[in-house]
Image (tube, rainbow, N blue to C red):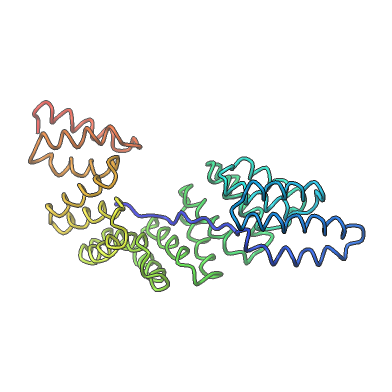
Length: 329
């Protein structure tokens, strides 16, 4: 059974900062000796924003760098530079830019949030968590940082802390379906299936056509041994996202739970059609055929071993394969 955590990372976009940039400039203009520097840097940042909006990112970078040179203490020059590097997938440059922003002003929560995302992308979960916590320390009502902190704890396997932070994110941003979905996933991992179903349904009340939420809801019903509701929701998910192998894999599980083996086989095979390296479907097909078609079972188990990205089932499959090839089954 597979469910999907929303991979949507809660960055604060460049365009979302434009009004804040203007506000900061007005405040900074009252600081003696700094207004002229800020004014020049702010003008260059505005020009960079123009190029950014037109997706002329190299030109935007040029102007943000000029703003940094004009006023090394102007945090938004670094911030916008970092966001632009992210657009170009230059993550190491983006990290350096955000670190420059923190050096200029360590009290801006959104900088710590976005830096945390980049560390999480690199697999540095402890460092990412530190940055998210720093963002929350600076702004206790900053919902994106709670959501991202929940993601980091979830990826660490700390599902209770993930739940706490996803719950806080939904309290602060009750109109976001992503938060309810991820909160539902945390509840699923904790075995609190009724709570998970409630949260998935909250997400669907806001956005009824989110296929991955319907998929996760179907998975929760499978774990509750309720094949009927699982199939209903998974078929809705399939209609919305017909190329998603996770949905077909879960449909296979639901039909197998209901005792409809032909339906299970059909959906596992469709999962493989959508993703020929979807190794779990090979494993499940191998298990189904192990008792009735030795050659097919050998074929599917062999493909599992070829594509498996985890060692958790490898020994079991190797043992079954040895028995099948020896004719013990």
